[in-house]
Image (cartoon, rainbow, N blue to C red; front, side, top):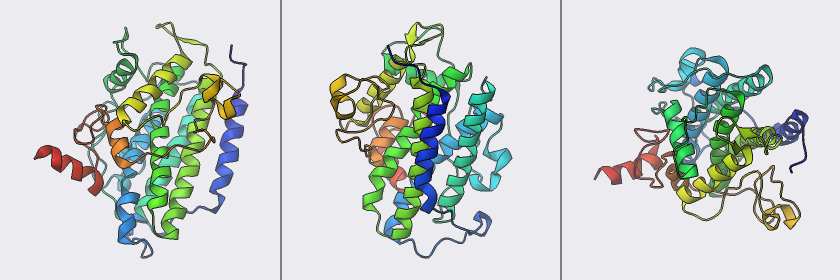
Length: 315
């Protein structure tokens, strides 16, 4: 039985992690001016642009989920006239969960602005945020269709489980990109982004850990089983070993082999896992192949890295 925690745990974790971001910065240049930083070398541009795909996804998910509107309403300049997301809508959230998700939403707007003030970026790709899209992920995680189909917008708990699907993938990408970056300005930007993305993931995991043994209605499946299955799916799709862990693990996999509770995912030394762009594409496309678009990106992700694989696929 997992000992009860409280929402204060989530707040404390977020506060500690966000302190790490105190040395980060948001580029002062306005997006409208498209005045990109001259201190970002060409070798870093692709690695800084690729995460925009995940940042767009998170921004739209959190904005619509908490406020019922997306970037087209709140920050249309950041979309660069990319297509509006499919099927996004407001979730049924209690006041506390809504407040948390709303904070995440505005943080993601800031992330988009920071990246786009450093590099040119690209228009928002087409995003599939329909209930069917998330239901497919959950069905694949369990190896069978759930009945009724999982609806991320139906309840606070469902939406938190859906949120578990997204930010962690992005933060592993930042960890993977950091050692490949050349300029200190690029590393500083990624460090700041990683700090807040990690904080978001920690809050989501803490809120779910508090309810780990609770069964999700009407499936009779616990929250921990949902997270474990989602993490196992991402490991399979990424096809690069274990880089994902659910909320409850065998003790030998817990921190220092001393605990079954796994409120934060980490390797044998409790360090964050790193993923490459290819691994991330395999996961967010939902099919385990970086060359075949689908999942949350029905027409593929944008940027030179992602489009290079789509060209291979098209040929």
